Image 1: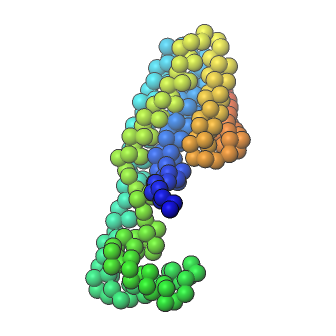
Image 2: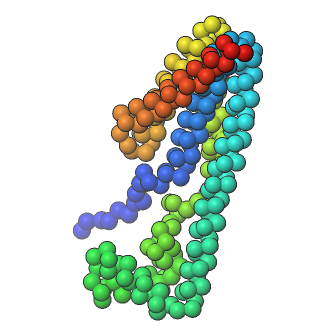
Image 3: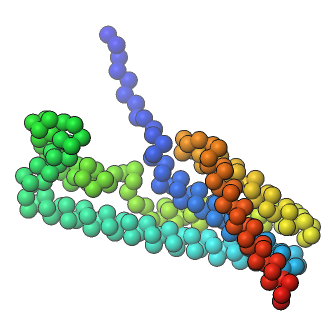
Length: 233
């Protein structure tokens, strides 16, 4: 007799919440800090001024990312709670209509009418709100909003990303900064793109090209503006 082994499958979509915040934070940290450093360096600033500007950018950016992620994801969470509250009231007021609504969703997915009604009845008997949250509203444990997790993840990864261009400035003579910072930052971005793709189970090439292209464009524009301002001021 064959034995049945029960195991929990780990799906990559379970990582989507923290992965999005982590990749966004690290990418912004590298690009924004490197761009700021290049803008200041192109204006012929001293090494101390470059480090000061970069350090200030790291702190301000990390706080901004944390606050922005918290507010944004909190808004999503508020919407989810409002939808769940409305659904709870509808289930209390007319459970039969809500069961028919759930059954209709299952019919659209391919079940016949009788089976759809039975599935809806059994699911609602166990957890009516959970069934409607998942199948009607699209809210699940995987996708539910987590404001604090998103805020801390974004702040931490932004700081880690921003520290890399600053490290390049510390290790380079001031007249090499315009070369070492963009080159090292592009390498960091390529590694970040590859890590993000691997963690999310996506292809490497497109992810690496995407992050390096936009990072290079941002740094080039900022350096060009800094060069123009440095010559005119």
